[in-house]
Length: 185
Image (cartoon, rainbow, N blue to C red):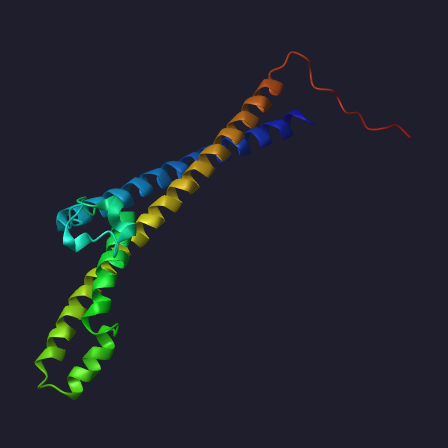
């Protein structure tokens, strides 16, 4: 390998170290930003799971939510558990498992029915909150994937840095580069 070729390889490796390092740093920042935003927005809502042993969190009806008893919904996993496990199960009982759109259609056909109107309001509010909590969970997953991608790019940066160090060591070794002479015919 000629000296010029080795310098080109080292320049390319240095560029790769800078690019991968920058991208890894950006992904670490993005992951932290997303998770911080999800936490801050959820914490501001002051949503709490019912206390352990309370009738609202019956262990027979909500066995999967017992681990969260009394805790505040402040991260994506808790938001998903509260949305699907707590709100979702309560909404199923409002109108015998019917959704907001189904009950709303019935209420529009019968505007004088106060019971249907109340179910429409309850389902609308519950499904809206459930959807917003699931958005928070979705964004927390984006933050998690960004974190994993940042780890992968950090490893790639270290590999390219090691390769660059190896090339630099070879470039400054004491032995001169071999001279490649064309064959004489």
